[in-house]
Image (cartoon, rainbow over all chains, first blue to last red; front, top):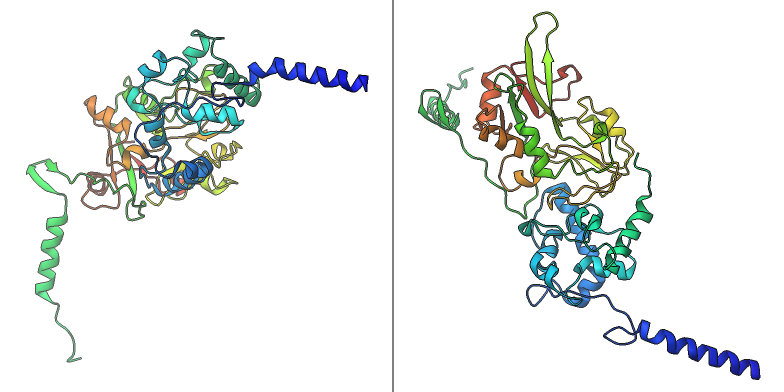
Length: 165
Length: 251
């Protein structure tokens, strides 16, 4: 009985200590930061997009690749147009606006094979690439301050290995 | 035999007139022609096999020091951002080749890129179906399916394909590129679908050489169809019978 109490108290202590680390701004569960997007509504309902966006994208990608159908609905370019904020707002913003809509959530959910190993992460109009992916940012600017960047780089390194030939 | 029909002269005349109208666009002055500009297809319409995109390179207009097409291609597709690859491993969609006839000493300079064959050997050998030819004759790699085996690189007689050896960043939105995939000239398919010309053609024209022209080989009114009809042009390695979309004049 004494041992049980000891264990129980240890468990309570552990939980108390870890609670602040777990608690995000939204409560006990850590959540990815979701930057605001342009417009009021995505091409489908939010719930549908959360569950099925990859299916829509995959279907559209095959049509584009093989048949040259380049409609904007369900195109990855159009995702970025609305969801990736302009360069200025992202660089200037604090923690709330930090990050990339797609990459943030993919890192959070552990989606390791996503579009952005090959596809650009920024819409063309801004002519700038996301600091998460830009090599300049990787080299020089805030190498340690951005936890998300570190995690993403970690993922990339694990996946790609060291050998280059 | 009394049923033997006389030729319908009225119909013949009409056909003749029609052909005259259809041929070669509008003559502005002797030697100056106005050709119809290729119309962009609607975005929601699939490409059609009625079109066969092609290029004609006039090697007599291509000067040996000029690298405008290669530079334009690199810029358009964001090439040359490899950090670790050796020079021989770097991606090239288009390269300049200098030819010299051993006996006569005649020299030619010409750009060589994916020749967009009608019967592409890269498509024949691809084990996954990643290498494919679009209905309009553009040969592409579907990098979503490519496993990076590089059979197509070995099969291509034109050495047109490259392999990406390292993780890349800073891709252009219209040219996704990534490690482990084979890639090659796309004939600037993103531009062609919008009704624009490939970047190399545009750069060559901007440079004043106008050595490369682009158009629909199936459209008898297009400049390229008129040119290949009028002047002798050839394929590189014509002996392979691949019926390439890229043709050369003057070699």
